[in-house]
Structure formats: C-alpha cells, structure tokens
Image 1 (tube, one colour):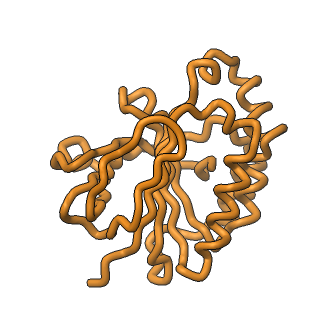
Image 2 (cartoon, one colour):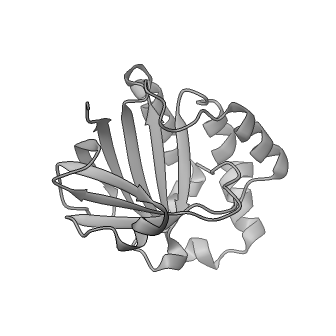
Image 3 (cartoon, rainbow, N blue to C red):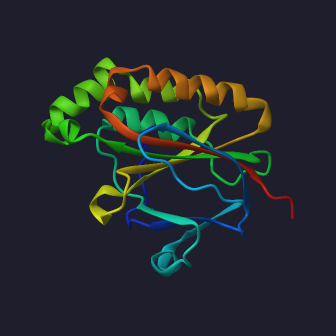
Length: 192
C-alpha cells in the first residue's frame, strides 16, 4: 500500500528478527521467491539507532519517504482516513517485504502508475480498509536491501480477516505479476 505523506525528513527503520523484541512472530510465510529464516521475536527501531541495529536472524531496513505513485488527491484521502500506528487495540501486525521484478523497474514512471492505480487500484483498495488497518511504507531499494519495499500494518485482532481480504485483493491485481519476492510475517504485540 502507498504511504500517506511522510514526514519532511525521511526516517530510517530497522526490523530485526531474533530472540527479543516487542512483537512475537506468529508465522513467516514465503509468498514468492526466497524465504526468510524463522525467529521468535521482532524488534522495530527507527531514527539514528536503526543504522546500527544489532544483527539478528535477519534485519531489514527501509526509509519513510515521499509517496511515489500517489496523487495529491489520493494522499489527502489517505491522510484523512489513516489511523495512527501504535494504537493500544492494534495488537496484531504484519511486515510484508516485497521486491518487484527488473521488468517493473524498466517501465517509465507513468507506466508504473497506470498499473499501480489505474488498473490495479492499489490505493483505492487500501482506502476501503482504513481506519481499521493502519500502515506505513518503507523504501529499501535505494539502500541496497534485498527488498524494494517493507510495508508495516497494524490492526486489532477482530480485523484480521479484513486484513487477509485486503492482501488477497492486492495479490490478485495486475501489479502483483511484477512481484518476484514477497514474504508475509504475521505478529502479535508482546504483553508488557
């Protein structure tokens, strides 16, 4: 999903899987391409500490940034409807790292936009699931990471089925024909 307008200053995030972290890893499913190793917990670090986040079973990094395929009108709709992350009732999360194919990146920006929204309706579909499902997009491609995007979602347990429907609809779209690697990591917030 596209992120709403990010802060003026991009923020680096590190998602580290290992034995510690504020999120319990319930499952790691390989949807397409190579897998990620299993781990018990996930920690999410942002800001300057993300650059030096400790190594774990795996660490993925991404930066919040300006939107790439979203129009000003769509960004305004997303901002008006988007719930904040970190809500107490949102005790479930998903981290979905995605890598697009070389064919996708060879397309011009307007061609990618046409597939992304005009034909696949990525933003339009996502809007249907707000505010119950909150999300944040992290860009990783320019950091030399193994994925192009890391999408973080949070939702309450009663919205898990809606989240599954959202992901299924996006995966059925034309845009997903250009995904050559995708992992679906489902998580539960660790009780304090």
